Length: 443
Image 1: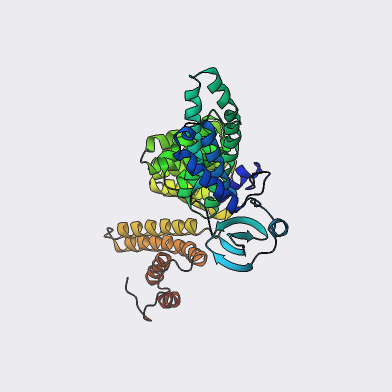
Image 2: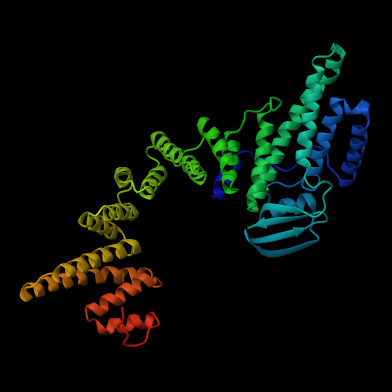
C-alpha cells in the first residue's frame, strides 16, 4: 500500500528546503520573540502584516533544521550541504534497516543510500505548521474586514494578500512533507492530520495553484489506514468525483463503507467501479468476494465468469467457482471447477483439500445408504462402491498435505481415511506426525 503515496507525490518534486536565505535557530527564535511581543500590542495585533509575518516565522521554524533536506537525497548530497555528521550508525527499525547520520539538531535516515526521513532532536516549537496556518487565517480575517474600510486602509493591506498567497503555496508543500514523513513512519493518524491540513490550505481561495487530485486521494487513503473511515469516504468520493484514480479507489471506498456498516453503499460503489473500469480485474475480484461473503452465489458466479474471461489461467477463479457450486449443493460442477484449477496449479492447497473433502463426503453418504440395504450381496456392492469413492479422496488430500504439511485438519482427515481404508503403514506415519501413539486407531 505504501507505493500509492510514492507514485502520487514523486511527480511533485517537493523538497524540504524553504527558500533563498539560510535559517539559523537563533535568528528564527529572535523573530518569534518579536512576533510574540507584537501580538500583545493592540495596535500591531490588528494589522494584517503582523499575522502574515508570524505565519512565516512558524514556517521557518518548521524548516530551520531541515532546510537542506529533501526526500530521495543521496548521502553525498547531504554531506555536501551539511558536512560530515557527528556520528554514523546503522539500526534495525520497524521500517527496515536504516543508516543514521547524526547532526547537532537532527538525525537523518537513509535506506540504500537514499534519504527517507529524519527526527529533530531540538525544536523551537513542537507543531509549528498549524500555528502558521492559524496565523494566516487571522491575517485573512483582518484583511477581509479591511475591505469594508477606507481606501488607504485597503491600499495598506493589499500587498499582504500576495504574501499570503505565496505563503500558502509553501505551506501546502510543508504539510505534505510532514504527512509523507509520518506515513513513512507508519504513523497514519498524524499523516492524515497533516494531509488534511494540506488540503485545507489548497481549498483556500488564497491558494492560487490548482487543487491536486492526488492530494485528495491520498488524504482519503491515509484516513482509511488511520481508521477514520468517515473521512476516508469523504475524500475518496471527492477524488472519484474529480475522476481521479482507477479500480483501487473503488475498492478502498468499498472497504471504508464496510467498516462503517453500510453494505448497500459498498455494493453500489463496486458496481459503479465495474461500470467505469470493466477491465479492472481488482474490481471484479472484489465484486465476486463481496457476493460470496453475502451468500449471493448467483451474482458471484456472474461476475466470476467475467473475471475468468479476463484471466482464464488464474486458478483462484476456477477454485472460487468450485467453492460456490459446492455451497450450492452441486458437487459435480464443483469437481469440474476444482479440476480446472488443479490443471493450472496442481499444488493449490485449497482446491486439493476441497476436492478431497467432496469425495470424502460423497463416500460417507454412499456408506450411509449402503447401511440401509438389507440384502447382503447388494449391501457389499454398495459398500465397495462407497469405498472406491473414498479412495479417490486420498491423492487430493495427500497433495494438500504436501502443499501445506502443517495443516492439522488435512492430517486428521488423512488419518481417518488411512484407518478406514486399512492403509496401516500410512496410518502409523500420520500418527507420528500428529504426535499420537503407535497403533492408535481412534477416530
